[in-house]
Image: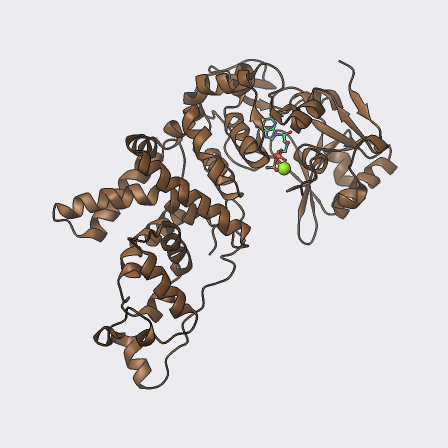
Length: 461
Ligand code: ATP
Ligand code: MG
């Protein structure tokens, strides 16, 4: 199919909106006689007048040629070599046009590949699929068209050509962008089988961009949802962070549950949500809380996300055990341990994130106590900001709201004994009280305004 080429005056991508490093890199490649395109999500987002997350470049220069052109270049990837250009505050990805098969994101990010070790390998050595049809490696250079058509969705396959500032559409990306449709390139069943993570990407883009997943693709997702477990657990963890931490978590839960993907990714949570509509509403509220935090300039951390998702069911399980006589913290620890172990086969939660999530949940009792014991010491703990976020997120007028107000007053600088709800005999005890007597009380550590702009994959501290 001949590509559709949209001249500069018929589209809205202005060089003003292109990242200056990316623009200079494109010019340099062009001036050396190479084809140089902006590709992928940045073209989609520029056309939609959204700010792109990253600017990816595709070219017919080989990795070796790119390396010779740019001093700040490092080649990464064992199988498909990819160039990273390092700038002071960012890394730009420049890849050589590539044929057929998926961009195995896991591979590019230095993670295990989908399906690795999960089945016998069949096919051409340069284009391997396992016996489930999952593509394991592909390292063939290709034409610009092949490079576009190997991509996941039509709206992600658009290119911006620096040679004449045109937009190139090899599929139906522009139409789908106008009609706000997520449409896989080619047969959805084949494309989701090659790389099941694309199903999560479809749900994510539909939520973040307010698009509709095309009916055949939605059917394919419902059919293939169980196969998501063939992707590597580390990669699925990264995808889960992208699903929930980028500002549209509230719109993700519904489709994730309805598609059947949630029940595979988080089986215990899936069952708990299905058991009671109230459960679903609680998690929905938590997820909307994460989005509000992001909008308010304090992006939620991975551990806060996990607490938001799993905390309520874990607290409930712990409480049930507690009623049977097990100390609450011990019961909570047991519930967390069991949940994380059950999860491990599908989604790997890094140990430090798991640990932090447990601390957030474990701290709730202390935060909800009115008045809290030793608030200065509590507020000095590393996980305090996230634990308070969780409290605020889950508070209802019946539970937690008063504690939330207490902490707000405390953090605004009020002396604990003057805050409503603090009885005289409940004044701080222990070290904090002793310090006060000596007149050396540490000022309570203020809640950090930005709980670190944690990108997916990172924790705040
Ligand atoms: P975001 O705004 O989240 O960065 P994006 O579309 O840029 O969205 P990336 O993960 O940055 O997504 O990937 C860049 C491009 O690489 C995509 O637009 C798509 O063309 C291609 N791509 C990424 N992952 C896959 C995949 N699993 N299968 C096929 N193509 C993919
Ligand atoms: Mg991107």
